[in-house]
Length: 138
Image (cartoon, rainbow, N blue to C red):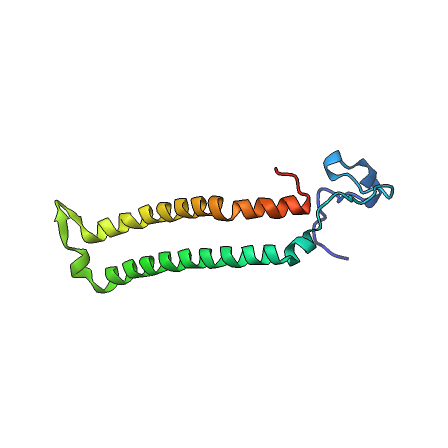
């Protein structure tokens, strides 16, 4: 005998599973698998897809490395070149503040460059791979 309190609400029994909402509809035995779906495994194993992934990966790695060098450089300057970062440019605006704000500007610029580059260089190839696979454009 346990003195632990019993839950106020009993869990639903499995016998009420037929009363599930339509969003949680049951799979009926008569439902046939879709035959018009693309063969995603074949797409992934194709040479065109592999080449596209390699190129996209190299491009993303290059941009990430470039940004990290810029970011780590800023952090190192802030930590070890404090006199340089404190150099006033005009009024109370110093080099550190300007370089810090340029971090935001560079993030937006890199994002814009990445989107434009992908739209021009990768998206046409993605559309071609989709067309060969019989995927309708969404």
